[in-house]
Length: 467
Image (cartoon, rainbow, N blue to C red; front, side, top):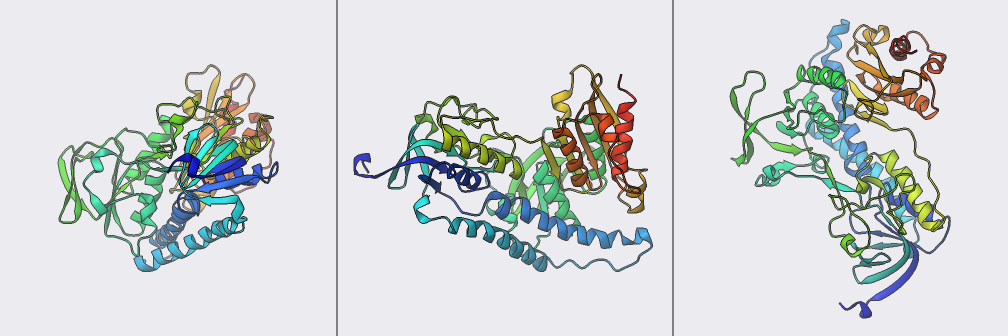
């Protein structure tokens, strides 16, 4: 259809994407103007609520319940082996998932229809967006289109036996076996959960990494810990991958003995990363400078793309793919889009990442990858294997590294694996955001006996290495 024949609507701000970044961006922009439109071409519900954070934690919770029964005998408490009903497990996952999604849908439905439009958005130029039969001329734009699972060419031909995390949460029951490719956040969380729910799994990595860890001491400890529980090869040599008799046949070299091995799995779960949703956005029609993935270059403090009136927030910018970061970025992007050209620096919180495997993995502040090679960085350590409270509850597995500046004593960051890491990470991230020194952290209260005393031990260790 010729543009002259299409309906044209002029708006102050157009927000593309109604997810974890798009919705906060929309609300922030409306503080400045009522002439805002929210354009969504996909399914409402956010990645987190529908296929990410929330349903994965539901599956993990079921796995933890089963595992607690399996390990009860170590306390002298004896019970029969847990009976895992896959249908019931997945029924609760889907039911609670739908409840979380429902909250998001309700918030969208409460938006006045004049403020949102269903359709795939595509840039015609920096200020003109086409969505179905509508043309929007926008003074400012927020791109918040999220990301999608990244699939490797080696998975071609596997048909319906190839799944991503989006698919798992619609299963009606648990399968007998799953091969997981990608020992990152998604692969570790879902792989271990499926294993503890009685599914035969094997996790394959190709790069040798165990994301998101970059501290090799913590990474190696974690790898050995997980290898003791389930088959894991972070640098697998894959000899063949094909569909046979409606199963995935994988030929590989067994990392334990170097022998060639062949195994069949009901499904292959691709957890090999996510790709920003920038394809078919028409960004080539804008004046924006793009990186190698086609993502606009942007300022992380303002979310502004170059000097334009286009802003980018959430997973689509391929920076910090976490819900709380997406929400913060959406707030900043929407606020600046609404107030443009009066750009302001937004609140960026101290980085914190948690992987909900068992033991949990966490990174706070600067990772080792960001600190390695810098002068005056010292490391404090603690093992949770002998830590009092951890031994009491039989969660005494883990290793923590704490990084500090040798001269100032400033707490720089930490990478660790350990019990209740999600809670330790929050304490440490608050300290990092407050720019506390190691001494100031040690002056905070530590109750007894608690796992946090392990953190205190690491802080004391790093303090002994300061000037």
